[in-house]
Image (cartoon, rainbow, N blue to C red; front, side, top):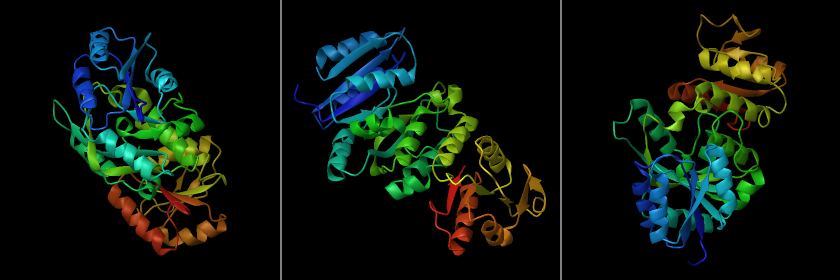
Length: 339
């Protein structure tokens, strides 16, 4: 086998139903000089047999067998064995379109300052796609440039993990995958962002992303809304909120839940902002709820802290953005949207 341009990192656990199809989409790639590092995480079904047969027919496939320990250990063990300078994540229940690796490797060759590149995705399911998942698919496919991804990074995870190819040097720099009690991929994007490295997407659906009832994002508590908020609060306090204070626009449920984690981290919240007349004049967690008309004055009196627009609705976020832009505030400098 020639020297691999990219290593495909494929963690596998009890994936006998979908694994062969996933492997077939890899061996059909238009880029030929890649390797597959398949990490079998103690599977108890026919996964090992499927991997063995695939490796016997294609010497680009290497298999690592370990006792069952979970996804993060599998990913980190696999990284150690990857030989190429680029690592493409892939999952055993997804499908890669033929040009995925070729397009992503070429993109990173042309853009040496980009740490990781994803692509647009096409969601599919054996049982139908829920409306909420379609909304997320549309949102994530709309984030392409490094600026768009950075702007929205505290709203939701802006890249689909198994669609991303990342520089091995960046993974090493930020410490690989970490167990923090929340989603390992979102944690990685936030660390890469915090280290100042841009990420981007190719404006083409090169990855088919399966939605199933047993997907980890549905069954593992690390992917809950509350744990996503914990992750956001942690990286906000270690990044945009290093000054130790913020004003939160949104005195509803989302702002209340976010503020709980920020206060626990020692962040001072001098005020909440809301447009609801029933909320204005009251307090939230000991801070006054003010109208947008009072924002400039209260912010100036508080030392001009960063503002967090914490509302779940995209329409409401866009309205807040227009209001803050009209005040001369700059997104990702003076304010961030968080959901």
